[in-house]
Amino acid sequence: MSKRNQRNLIYALSLIMVWSLPIMAFMRPDSPESSQLTYTLAWEWGDAMQTETGWQVTNNLGYTIEVTEGYIVAYEAQLNACEHSHGWFNWDWLTIPSVYAGHGDDSNDSSLRTSYVENIALPETTAWGTVNLAEPTYCEAFFLVARGATDTLNQPESVDMFATSIYLSGTVTAPDNDDAMPFTLQTQHANGTVQPFLQDEQSVHLALSYDDMEIAIVRSLDTLFDEIDFANDSSDDASFQVLRNLLNNTQFHVISGTTHKN
Image (tube, rainbow, N blue to C red; front, side, top):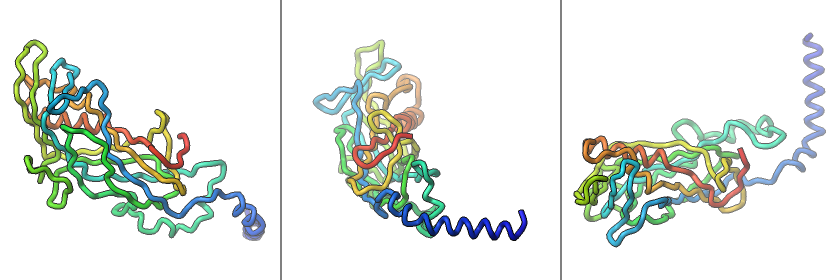
């Protein structure tokens, strides 16, 4: 294409843009520049059953485990923005790139870095914290379990969770034995997971809106001890398997907010 034709094309596109802006402004959905999001920590019981002193479950290898004391450190959560826009028209090319200023690799407005000790022997739903969101859509969430720090909230009196990510104690009964034996599992390892959002068992992405927004970070109790052979696994291996099970079975449920199916 000649330079003259290029100039004519640019001029024509510019005119179209000028004529179309009022229509686009009318058609563009009304959405806020930011929204508030609450992270909630929650548990799914599955086949686990509450007892007088905690809860118990039988793992996939036949061991019956009763947890009478236990803690985990919920260390961090954040959302990952979508790489695409939703809808029939991509509005992103009309926006000024600086709207994403400050959202670099080392900064994410959705990050909640208030580490908190959960009492896993008495599982309950906890409002963890609230953040402000600025990206138009989010497709995934990240959750990290890591070692407790000096500023970690809700530290128990009976166990020092400083430099510890998971602590569990109770009794275990082998499938071919009726005698319950005490156990203690403890690890300093950290692990995280990235998963899409779920709403009514459908994969969705989250959009900014004027509605209240809440994400529940749901972990599974009945799979926590799967694949652990208490008679043969070392304490370190069993402790890391608990951490692996915890993160592998974490889901992010959208409790409230504007969503679109993926």
